[in-house]
Image (cartoon, rainbow over all chains, first blue to last red; front, side, top):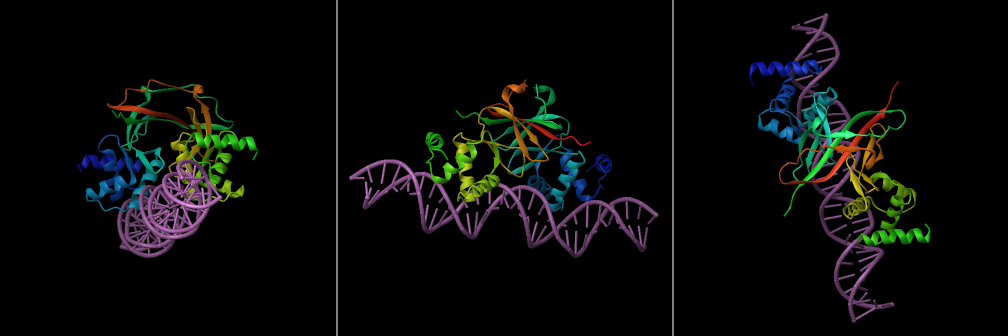
Length: 139
Length: 139
DNA sequence: TTTCTTTTTTAGAAGAATTCTAATCTATTG
DNA sequence: CAATAGATTAGAATTCTTCTAAAAAAGAAA
């Protein structure tokens, strides 16, 4: 890990009020040094193992949630059996390939949601999530 | 349960190639005799218990899935810890009240999704799901 | 009906994902 | 460096869901 990369990641954590521990830095590196990612806890854990980083699954979960609470990650709910975390925290939507369980971003401007009806009394919008579920065409 | 109601529900099950067993009829009644509903397995199970219907949780799950496979129900994925089943099987979207965990329908025509970008090669759309997540305004 | 076959139900075990516990360790502060 | 607040961890526990395999019920055939 280059020195400057490390500095950037460390600042990112500090700005989010998270101590840059060895584990957090390793996770931040896996998450943010390879473009936008959509990842599950188990998958991140095995990537960490593969990278030779000693980190428990409990810590993965703790950190995924802390990162999410600090706005460093966003949770995407597409599958009732697993949680996905998205490193792209700007407003956007998703394709979800049901067979492979993979997600792909849809840029906010590539899709328009209009005419949202008036909200129930006393409520406000937290987010508008569009999931376009897709499958391979079978011939 | 009125005789005619029972006949209607029984036909509904038969049309879906499901034998109208005592348990299925009881579930169908809970699901379809009170307007559109969004319900979890646990909740449906306790409603059945309350109604004095002897039915195991395994049967609830079996039937929710069979109903879904036959198009009598539709699964709505909004919460990574629980599955919701919707008795409204026509295309529409949802408000999801995050604090209470309740769903509310948004009629298809009340909301427009436009400009879906071209799909990844070799795929087709299975569904387009919009979830408007809402929360109580806190003052 | 009676019999046969297929489907359904069930209790309880098993599984998978996630959270909790409470002990140990680490980072930061004074 | 010492104190303390925060972080990590193994493993247990929890929650939701699925599986298993045996018993019960439904439908079909005679």
